[in-house]
Image 1 (spheres, rainbow, N blue to C red):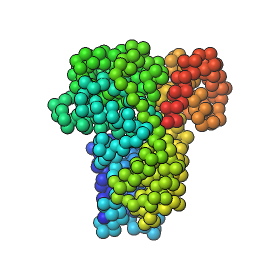
Image 2 (cartoon, protein in one colour):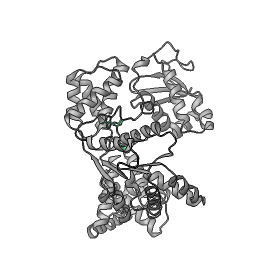
Image 3 (cartoon, helix red, strand yellow):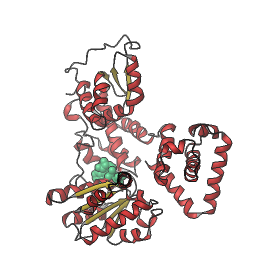
Image 4 (cartoon, helix red, strand yellow):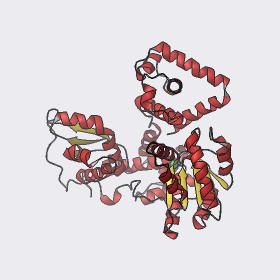
Length: 448
Ligand code: ADP
Ligand code: MG
């Protein structure tokens, strides 16, 4: 059985992966876990000043760590001596025997579950991609090179990529394996250029025996990344090293991708993953329920499978929520519980501030411009351009008022926002590739 204390300890370990030892010791370790229920985790720290700092700087980190350990999302409440309610006992950490969650029922967290071929469930929609991945993992650089897998969000692409990596790591322990996401490749390259370490960067990638690039669509539109990647690709290909690429769309639909890369991406085998059919959705739910050691009545399985059709991550999410209700309230899975779990999963619409940040980050990444500059006052043409696009996309996605959008960008007034949006609209109407780049950005932002 697990108490909140133990859950908290695990969460602190998780936070150790993101925070420095100093932050951890100075702030996080001063928190005392008090109580947890299905909606919120309550923590305590005597000093209200310290509490305010923790809330402003670390809320998200704490919430993320807790939800990783628990397998579902939870709100955070931190009381200080000044504002603690009198009906809860503070200071004393919860006793171990006040256990809350049976240990063996704890949902497995992402880091615990390895992505392997063994736990990848095959159906019509992913059979081809799975077979291609298995072939490449068994015969690297002889079967298909490169292997290019594409498909929508939450359909198992990253799972397959990791499975290839894990299999090859076992059968070829001496191989140098590199797994990287397209945008991290870009960031690393930019950093290498800044610190004059491009030689090291090159050596690292060009000496790999297996290069796996996830979400490779993000290198579209980035000149220096594509140039560097082109040479990396050639070096590996000529040395007969396996390359596996994953993307949310086929090569020909990746915006602003150099032709020479596009053709290379198409040299080997291209495999797509489609949305799962009913049988696969049922099979996945049953298998995952079994792994979580939860018994789901058949009508509940069918109910979930009939409602979540396009995304396996969401199927899993609904299942975890159903389990969470069970663990925290003792209510066994039923259609009513599943219904509310599905609603939670589908309503995970983020609050508007998160969306704004995401727009600015995505657009910044696309044009290689620092988000601070986009929000700030500089008016060089590339920054202005990115800023106008952000305003346009925010208006599209959130329907926020023009003055409210202006406020997000160093208090610009509504006429500036109006002018910006008009500019972008004009360009969209006159330039097809600009139009599709913007649609693409919007799809990416919404799809996250
Ligand atoms: P993508 O990279 O395509 O967005 P992921 O590989 O991250 O998707 O998959 C999302 C979640 O769904 C993961 O937890 C993954 O394990 C699970 N998943 C996807 N497809 C399958 C499958 N065929 N069998 C088992 N789990 C799957
Ligand atoms: Mg992925």
